[in-house]
Image (cartoon, rainbow, N blue to C red):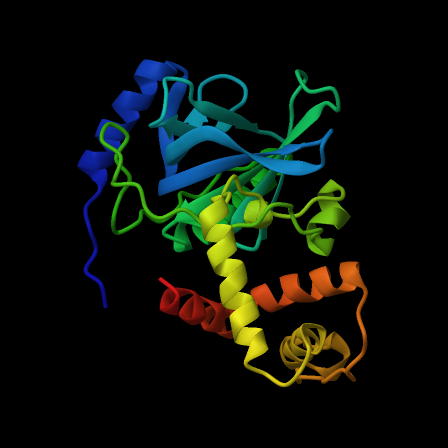
Length: 277
Protein backbone atom coordinates (compact mmCIF):
# COMPACT_ATOMS: atom_id res chain seq x y z
CA UNK A 1 0.00 0.00 0.00
CA UNK A 2 1.42 3.38 -1.04
CA UNK A 3 2.17 5.85 1.72
CA UNK A 4 0.15 9.08 1.67
CA UNK A 5 2.01 12.10 0.35
CA UNK A 6 1.55 15.59 1.77
CA UNK A 7 0.92 17.79 -1.27
CA UNK A 8 -0.25 20.90 0.57
CA UNK A 9 2.98 22.83 0.00
CA UNK A 10 3.06 21.93 -3.68
CA UNK A 11 -0.63 22.81 -4.06
CA UNK A 12 -0.04 26.20 -2.45
CA UNK A 13 2.81 26.89 -4.89
CA UNK A 14 0.72 25.82 -7.88
CA UNK A 15 -2.16 28.01 -6.70
CA UNK A 16 0.13 31.05 -6.49
CA UNK A 17 1.37 30.44 -10.04
CA UNK A 18 -2.18 30.08 -11.37
CA UNK A 19 -3.41 33.18 -9.53
CA UNK A 20 -0.69 35.27 -11.20
CA UNK A 21 -2.27 34.28 -14.52
CA UNK A 22 -5.89 34.58 -13.37
CA UNK A 23 -6.55 36.54 -10.18
CA UNK A 24 -10.11 35.18 -10.03
CA UNK A 25 -8.88 31.68 -9.17
CA UNK A 26 -9.65 30.98 -5.53
CA UNK A 27 -8.99 27.28 -5.02
CA UNK A 28 -7.25 24.27 -6.56
CA UNK A 29 -9.76 21.41 -6.84
CA UNK A 30 -7.86 18.82 -8.90
CA UNK A 31 -4.62 18.27 -10.81
CA UNK A 32 -3.16 16.07 -13.54
CA UNK A 33 0.57 15.76 -14.09
CA UNK A 34 0.79 16.03 -17.88
CA UNK A 35 -1.70 16.37 -20.74
CA UNK A 36 -1.62 16.93 -24.51
CA UNK A 37 -4.56 18.74 -26.11
CA UNK A 38 -6.24 18.02 -29.46
CA UNK A 39 -9.14 19.94 -31.04
CA UNK A 40 -11.77 18.53 -33.39
CA UNK A 41 -11.94 20.43 -36.69
CA UNK A 42 -15.68 20.54 -37.38
CA UNK A 43 -15.19 21.59 -41.00
CA UNK A 44 -12.68 18.93 -42.01
CA UNK A 45 -14.13 16.40 -39.53
CA UNK A 46 -10.68 15.50 -38.23
CA UNK A 47 -8.57 15.96 -35.11
CA UNK A 48 -5.78 18.55 -34.97
CA UNK A 49 -3.14 18.62 -32.29
CA UNK A 50 -2.97 22.01 -30.57
CA UNK A 51 0.27 23.56 -29.39
CA UNK A 52 -0.87 23.02 -25.81
CA UNK A 53 0.58 20.57 -23.33
CA UNK A 54 1.55 20.66 -19.70
CA UNK A 55 -0.04 20.29 -16.27
CA UNK A 56 -3.82 20.36 -16.02
CA UNK A 57 -5.67 21.96 -13.11
CA UNK A 58 -9.33 22.02 -12.19
CA UNK A 59 -9.88 25.29 -10.31
CA UNK A 60 -12.63 27.15 -8.49
CA UNK A 61 -13.09 30.87 -9.23
CA UNK A 62 -14.64 33.90 -7.55
CA UNK A 63 -16.53 34.86 -10.72
CA UNK A 64 -18.20 33.01 -13.58
CA UNK A 65 -17.37 30.45 -14.67
CA UNK A 66 -17.18 29.22 -11.07
CA UNK A 67 -15.15 26.17 -12.14
CA UNK A 68 -12.59 25.88 -14.89
CA UNK A 69 -10.25 23.39 -16.55
CA UNK A 70 -6.90 25.14 -16.90
CA UNK A 71 -3.90 23.76 -18.82
CA UNK A 72 -0.65 25.54 -17.93
CA UNK A 73 1.01 25.41 -21.35
CA UNK A 74 4.70 24.52 -21.40
CA UNK A 75 5.01 25.16 -25.16
CA UNK A 76 4.05 28.85 -25.13
CA UNK A 77 2.54 31.59 -22.99
CA UNK A 78 -0.93 30.82 -24.41
CA UNK A 79 -2.74 28.61 -21.91
CA UNK A 80 -6.03 26.76 -22.34
CA UNK A 81 -8.98 27.58 -20.08
CA UNK A 82 -12.31 25.74 -20.40
CA UNK A 83 -15.22 26.95 -18.32
CA UNK A 84 -17.24 24.23 -16.58
CA UNK A 85 -20.93 25.06 -16.85
CA UNK A 86 -24.22 23.22 -17.23
CA UNK A 87 -23.73 22.97 -21.03
CA UNK A 88 -20.39 21.15 -20.73
CA UNK A 89 -20.24 17.50 -21.83
CA UNK A 90 -17.45 15.13 -20.81
CA UNK A 91 -16.68 11.55 -21.74
CA UNK A 92 -13.78 9.11 -21.88
CA UNK A 93 -13.03 7.53 -25.27
CA UNK A 94 -9.98 5.36 -25.93
CA UNK A 95 -7.09 7.05 -24.07
CA UNK A 96 -8.67 10.50 -24.23
CA UNK A 97 -10.96 12.72 -22.21
CA UNK A 98 -13.43 14.30 -24.64
CA UNK A 99 -14.80 17.72 -23.68
CA UNK A 100 -17.55 19.57 -25.58
CA UNK A 101 -17.89 23.14 -24.39
CA UNK A 102 -19.78 26.27 -25.42
CA UNK A 103 -17.60 28.70 -27.40
CA UNK A 104 -19.15 31.72 -29.09
CA UNK A 105 -16.06 32.25 -31.26
CA UNK A 106 -16.83 29.01 -33.10
CA UNK A 107 -19.30 29.04 -36.00
CA UNK A 108 -21.13 26.09 -34.45
CA UNK A 109 -21.24 27.72 -31.02
CA UNK A 110 -19.14 25.03 -29.38
CA UNK A 111 -15.70 23.39 -29.48
CA UNK A 112 -14.63 19.80 -28.89
CA UNK A 113 -11.32 18.92 -27.25
CA UNK A 114 -9.59 15.58 -26.84
CA UNK A 115 -7.15 15.50 -23.92
CA UNK A 116 -4.51 12.79 -23.53
CA UNK A 117 -3.23 12.15 -20.00
CA UNK A 118 -0.02 10.81 -18.54
CA UNK A 119 -0.24 8.87 -16.33
CA UNK A 120 -3.46 7.27 -17.57
CA UNK A 121 -5.12 7.11 -14.15
CA UNK A 122 -5.25 10.93 -14.12
CA UNK A 123 -7.80 10.75 -16.95
CA UNK A 124 -10.36 8.73 -14.99
CA UNK A 125 -9.72 10.79 -11.87
CA UNK A 126 -10.33 14.03 -13.79
CA UNK A 127 -13.42 12.62 -15.51
CA UNK A 128 -15.01 11.65 -12.18
CA UNK A 129 -14.15 15.04 -10.70
CA UNK A 130 -15.72 16.92 -13.63
CA UNK A 131 -18.82 14.73 -13.44
CA UNK A 132 -19.20 15.61 -9.76
CA UNK A 133 -18.72 19.30 -10.52
CA UNK A 134 -21.35 19.17 -13.27
CA UNK A 135 -23.84 17.58 -10.88
CA UNK A 136 -23.06 20.33 -8.38
CA UNK A 137 -23.30 23.12 -10.96
CA UNK A 138 -26.70 21.89 -12.12
CA UNK A 139 -28.02 21.38 -8.59
CA UNK A 140 -26.30 24.29 -6.85
CA UNK A 141 -24.68 22.07 -4.20
CA UNK A 142 -21.05 21.91 -2.94
CA UNK A 143 -18.34 20.01 -4.81
CA UNK A 144 -16.23 17.39 -2.96
CA UNK A 145 -12.49 17.67 -3.52
CA UNK A 146 -10.65 15.23 -5.72
CA UNK A 147 -8.04 13.02 -3.99
CA UNK A 148 -4.56 14.39 -4.61
CA UNK A 149 -2.22 12.28 -6.77
CA UNK A 150 0.82 10.69 -5.17
CA UNK A 151 3.00 12.48 -7.70
CA UNK A 152 1.58 16.03 -7.79
CA UNK A 153 1.79 18.24 -10.84
CA UNK A 154 4.24 21.11 -10.96
CA UNK A 155 2.91 24.35 -12.42
CA UNK A 156 6.28 26.11 -12.50
CA UNK A 157 8.50 23.26 -13.62
CA UNK A 158 6.52 20.63 -15.55
CA UNK A 159 7.79 17.07 -15.51
CA UNK A 160 9.81 15.64 -18.37
CA UNK A 161 7.60 15.12 -21.40
CA UNK A 162 6.50 11.46 -21.73
CA UNK A 163 6.20 9.59 -24.99
CA UNK A 164 3.21 10.73 -27.00
CA UNK A 165 0.43 8.35 -28.07
CA UNK A 166 1.02 6.67 -31.43
CA UNK A 167 -1.87 7.46 -33.74
CA UNK A 168 -2.92 7.20 -37.38
CA UNK A 169 -4.12 9.65 -40.00
CA UNK A 170 -7.94 9.83 -39.59
CA UNK A 171 -10.06 9.63 -36.43
CA UNK A 172 -12.31 6.62 -35.85
CA UNK A 173 -16.05 7.14 -35.67
CA UNK A 174 -16.81 6.31 -32.07
CA UNK A 175 -20.45 5.30 -31.59
CA UNK A 176 -20.35 6.21 -27.91
CA UNK A 177 -19.24 9.77 -28.67
CA UNK A 178 -21.43 10.15 -31.73
CA UNK A 179 -24.51 9.66 -29.58
CA UNK A 180 -23.49 12.52 -27.31
CA UNK A 181 -21.41 14.94 -29.37
CA UNK A 182 -21.91 14.21 -33.05
CA UNK A 183 -19.96 12.13 -35.60
CA UNK A 184 -16.55 12.21 -33.99
CA UNK A 185 -14.18 9.82 -32.30
CA UNK A 186 -11.08 10.26 -30.21
CA UNK A 187 -7.82 11.75 -31.54
CA UNK A 188 -6.28 8.26 -31.38
CA UNK A 189 -6.01 8.00 -35.17
CA UNK A 190 -5.01 11.60 -35.87
CA UNK A 191 -1.31 12.20 -36.37
CA UNK A 192 1.26 14.23 -38.25
CA UNK A 193 3.61 11.24 -38.45
CA UNK A 194 4.82 10.70 -42.04
CA UNK A 195 7.36 8.09 -43.11
CA UNK A 196 10.24 9.16 -45.30
CA UNK A 197 10.49 7.71 -48.79
CA UNK A 198 13.33 5.42 -47.74
CA UNK A 199 11.43 4.20 -44.69
CA UNK A 200 8.32 3.59 -46.75
CA UNK A 201 10.23 1.58 -49.36
CA UNK A 202 11.99 -0.48 -46.68
CA UNK A 203 8.74 -1.17 -44.84
CA UNK A 204 6.98 -2.10 -48.07
CA UNK A 205 9.77 -4.50 -49.06
CA UNK A 206 9.63 -6.03 -45.58
CA UNK A 207 5.88 -6.65 -45.87
CA UNK A 208 6.17 -8.07 -49.37
CA UNK A 209 9.11 -10.19 -48.30
CA UNK A 210 7.16 -11.63 -45.40
CA UNK A 211 4.12 -12.34 -47.59
CA UNK A 212 6.24 -13.87 -50.37
CA UNK A 213 7.47 -16.54 -47.95
CA UNK A 214 3.94 -17.94 -47.85
CA UNK A 215 2.26 -20.03 -50.54
CA UNK A 216 -0.79 -17.79 -50.29
CA UNK A 217 -1.25 -14.72 -52.46
CA UNK A 218 -0.93 -11.29 -50.75
CA UNK A 219 -4.72 -10.90 -50.78
CA UNK A 220 -5.20 -14.34 -49.23
CA UNK A 221 -2.52 -13.60 -46.62
CA UNK A 222 -4.22 -10.41 -45.50
CA UNK A 223 -7.67 -12.06 -45.61
CA UNK A 224 -6.49 -14.86 -43.32
CA UNK A 225 -4.77 -12.39 -40.96
CA UNK A 226 -7.93 -10.31 -40.70
CA UNK A 227 -10.02 -13.41 -40.10
CA UNK A 228 -7.73 -14.37 -37.24
CA UNK A 229 -8.02 -11.03 -35.46
CA UNK A 230 -11.67 -10.30 -36.26
CA UNK A 231 -13.93 -10.49 -33.22
CA UNK A 232 -17.68 -10.62 -33.65
CA UNK A 233 -19.70 -8.73 -31.07
CA UNK A 234 -22.56 -11.19 -31.50
CA UNK A 235 -20.32 -14.11 -30.52
CA UNK A 236 -19.69 -12.71 -27.05
CA UNK A 237 -16.01 -11.91 -27.67
CA UNK A 238 -15.14 -15.30 -29.22
CA UNK A 239 -12.97 -15.28 -32.34
CA UNK A 240 -14.84 -15.86 -35.59
CA UNK A 241 -13.16 -16.88 -38.82
CA UNK A 242 -14.21 -15.61 -42.22
CA UNK A 243 -14.12 -17.63 -45.40
CA UNK A 244 -11.33 -16.65 -47.75
CA UNK A 245 -12.55 -14.33 -50.45
CA UNK A 246 -11.12 -12.17 -53.20
CA UNK A 247 -10.88 -8.52 -52.19
CA UNK A 248 -10.92 -5.48 -54.38
CA UNK A 249 -8.35 -2.70 -53.90
CA UNK A 250 -10.38 -0.78 -51.29
CA UNK A 251 -11.27 -3.95 -49.37
CA UNK A 252 -7.64 -5.01 -49.43
CA UNK A 253 -6.60 -1.61 -48.03
CA UNK A 254 -9.21 -1.85 -45.26
CA UNK A 255 -8.12 -5.40 -44.47
CA UNK A 256 -4.48 -4.35 -44.26
CA UNK A 257 -5.37 -1.47 -41.92
CA UNK A 258 -7.22 -3.93 -39.69
CA UNK A 259 -4.16 -6.17 -39.65
CA UNK A 260 -2.03 -3.21 -38.53
CA UNK A 261 -4.29 -2.90 -35.46
CA UNK A 262 -3.07 -6.36 -34.38
CA UNK A 263 0.18 -6.06 -32.31
CA UNK A 264 1.30 -9.57 -33.34
CA UNK A 265 0.97 -8.70 -37.04
CA UNK A 266 2.87 -5.43 -36.60
CA UNK A 267 5.56 -7.28 -34.63
CA UNK A 268 6.07 -9.70 -37.54
CA UNK A 269 6.39 -6.81 -39.98
CA UNK A 270 8.85 -5.03 -37.70
CA UNK A 271 11.01 -8.12 -37.33
CA UNK A 272 11.11 -8.51 -41.11
CA UNK A 273 11.92 -4.82 -41.43
CA UNK A 274 14.85 -4.96 -38.98
CA UNK A 275 16.37 -7.90 -40.83
CA UNK A 276 16.69 -5.73 -43.93
CA UNK A 277 18.62 -2.97 -42.15
